[in-house]
Image (cartoon, rainbow, N blue to C red; front, side, top):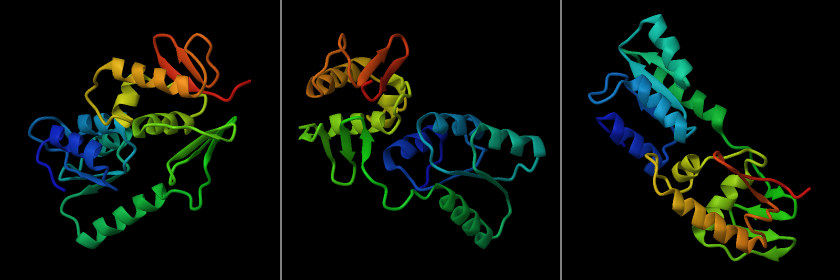
Length: 198
């Protein structure tokens, strides 16, 4: 898929989840380097900059902003193909990854099932996605903005209340409350983290 503006590109990254992004820095609505930072705020997709700008400082700045590679125009198509293969090799998931386990919580992503102390949890699709996202980052405080971007695919933010409501439902199904947390712990003014019970 190809887009002509930075904002269209960002929306495409969030909604289409591409394997790799080829980014020209000369965009009509926003500098490409700013777009790199925006993509990095919501996604870890590999980014290869393809640009006529060959200034060393520009290349360093793009890589520091989060680009994975930088290719100066003009270039041979087989060189681009090789760069794409190289960045995709670096992000290939580990094969035969098992379920996510945090304490008595077991989440099987391919089967989209979750159990707590060997009891099946009846979760809505969004509750499952939310729980999985938090469980793959045990002990890490995740902001509501990040949850809106990664779970709800709203890179420009949205209603924090949506996150609060789903966290409330999720807590109830885990047999806990915000006042008496077991797995889901609120960090006031920052976000929420999922931890194994002590």
